[in-house]
Length: 238
Ligand code: ADE
Image 1 (cartoon, rainbow, N blue to C red):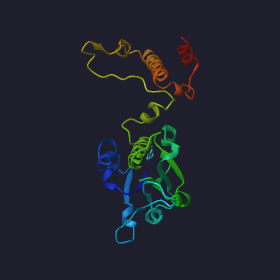
Image 2: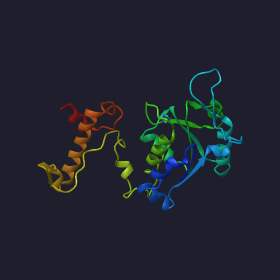
Image 3: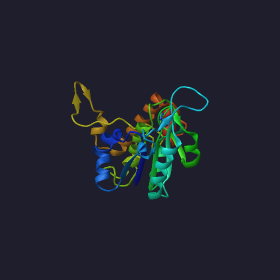
Image 4: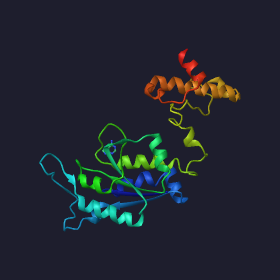
């Protein structure tokens, strides 16, 4: 899968994209991430990329010309790519959105900055806008990193075991059950006996119940959209 990131700050992506699972996915050719600096497409002497808003007001607005030139240059290489804009104004990015985007071959992610971008960039180039939450970041770069990370987990071969992304928190609408590894006891706190029992039916039941309990306690809103069966409902009614 190919990601082209349109940003004013390419170095921000150095760390996250060059470590761990993402790095391995890139090295194995499963993922290709290219960074494009919007400032390289500013044609004036000072390479200006922002300007004061028409109508007055605080802050600066990202100019349309360098952004348009940058997006168009990327599009000549990726004519079929979907163009995404990261902005607090977008559709909420979640598990389903990540899986949906992972079904595409090519994505161009435009990182918004400053007080906003000239609206004509949206009208002329952007296919879809995403927000990673109801808060405002100083720019869309962190949002783009979050999205790339969440999307590539769905690409076959990126995670160690196939299906890991499908078993995640949110895959069935519930938070994930608690996990333990060795030692069996740490400062008096023991791993639940059922996990040591070797009884996989019991373990499965326990995990499901813990996922239900946790979701009800921390994110009760998720229960409405979760895929619940009869015994889930019985358990929650207890
Ligand atoms: N840019 C600024 N805040 C953002 C958010 N919450 N999501 C996506 N992009 C953003």
